[in-house]
Length: 259
Ligand code: PEP
Image (cartoon, rainbow, N blue to C red; front, side):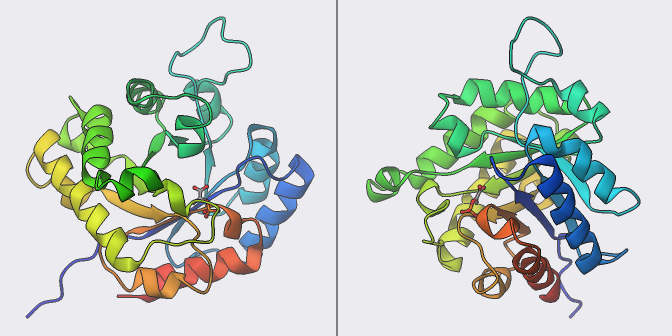
């Protein structure tokens, strides 16, 4: 029997509000040195806006992609303090995180705004990393599937299969982000299957199998091999453990190691 084709793996580091430009440039240079000219899988770094240029310079000539952590849905205008997708693309970004729970729950971003941001990212040639996930109270009430279906349906409704394929989804249970309480591989797989089945229904049959679905939430060098043993997980969105070159490198290596 021929082996089942595996989706390519993709690991992205979300630096959140950490690293000045100088610190970010230094970390990116260290990672380039660790990962070499040919990283074992796709990798991206998402520093704060102010470190984008320093990190872009450090990544110059490397296949490691540059990403931002947020964008405004409008292309331009009177939106003080905001950044457009076109600005991010011009700054060298290939990716942008959309709908991170720290923005949904901390900054009041709702499903409708996340959907607009996803479309804005695509309009401006960026690959959105669309974050979805339930809170602890939603999980405890048995609402995990409802939340995932609602978030995916709202974000992807109206997208063609080819467009959906050019996005990345990060399943990030809110209770696992920055808490040290990682989802079990079984919990992550179950959520990923719900996400793929919802894509099949909303975007079209087969869509779910073609979209990269990362897991995010307290991934570190120790738990990464156990998580990545699951072919359902196409990579990870990594917060805390991406702030140090050695741990991020070990996560990337773990993602690439499992066939
Ligand atoms: C994140 O910020 O997307 C994240 C998953 O954070 P952490 O890895 O620190 O839980």
